[in-house]
Image (cartoon, rainbow, N blue to C red):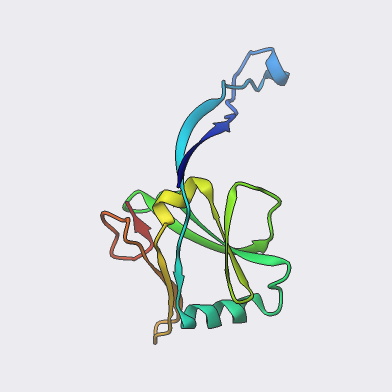
Length: 145
């Protein structure tokens, strides 16, 4: 199921000698349409174990937030954070046992179908994301387009 959602952002701009809002000024809202798809992701058993250890009993109040941020060598970077559950209906919620994962609707097309794994190595462990939607990725494995 695909639906369109409009996102509105108000950007703050510094303006010298303007009398509006104490001289700081403002800009008009930027409206862009975003395609939203129902997200389906895979979480490996090693990733589940690593997340359970990281959440250390806070699964009832905290969630794993996975997002795609602008930046990196290839255009976008993955961001994963354990946060208190947000009060926002703009997220898709996926549950694996007691672990809840939130993905914002704006990132749904880029993150649909990802596979999250955890690898432990001599250089240290870390989460790895395989993304079937990425047309290219950086050698560091942190950015994609």
